[in-house]
Amino acid sequence: MYGTSERLLRLLSLLQARRDWPGPDLADRLGVDVRTVRRDVERLRGLGYPVHATPGVAGGYRLGAGAALPPLLLDDDEAVAVAVGLRTAANGTVSGIEETSVRALAKLEQVLPARLRHRVSAMGSAMLQLGGGGPVVDAEVLTVIAAACRDHERVRFTYANHTGQVTERDVEPLRLVHTGRRWYLVAYDLDRDGWRTFRVDRIDGVPAPGFRFAPREPPAEDLAAYVSQAISSAPYAHQMSLLVSVPAEVLAARVPPTAGTVEPVDEHTCRLRTGATDLAAAPFYLAQWDYDFVVEDAPPGLVDRLARIAERFASAAARS
Image (tube, rainbow, N blue to C red; front, side):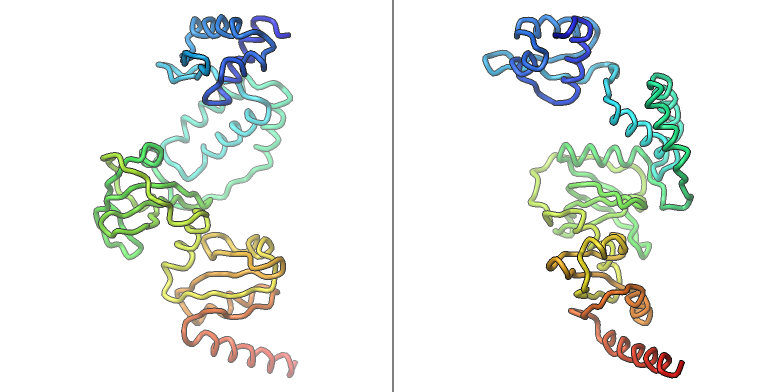
């Protein structure tokens, strides 16, 4: 049985962990009756927490948004994750949040227990971030797009493609995808009547939200694979598909999503879809692995290039 203060903290933690809570479920978690839960909710409201109630037999409670951010209760792993995330954000690819990330991290570390402060400090001292990881994206742009994805609102923006051509785009945004180096937006392009993938750093200015829309069927069940395919092969003049004699998870560890899409075929084989700007360089890219492969689909001339290079290497090895 919790004491009153401890029970209030426990109740607040539960309300922050899940969007909706039936009253009986909260009572069961806290080991009290429903009437006590109602009194505790009133105490939280008195402290400034906007707890909304739904009346009726199936009624429950929800922690709403207030005029100010209320204190958050985090467990140990959540606190460490937030601290490490803030450290990363201070030097990340999203502009405009570096200073605020440092201020938030200072506040968090001030109240961390010694055991957690040691964990965060150890991780921070072990982490080294190299510069030039990718183009920087304005935080406001990401925030507006993320809200439009959540609220199913159209957005309009000026966009420059990989050739530098600038166009106005009206889209229905679906999801933001981060590859670790770049941010991409998957959206339905209304003018081109099809799904497209946009690099967020090529969007000029802050997108303008518009009318709400009814969500469409996504272009793929696995959006991460969809984006990987779009950015790793579609932009290139020469595209290819290979059957590689290695489990998918092994090859995926060596091929970043920006370089190709790996699909499992069976437990010993996978399919790689990739592309190349220069066909002459493709054989040397494929030769870097120690895995056998079969060309399933490729542009004209690739197989002949592979054969000529194989003969040349075999001849060199025979004379050595």
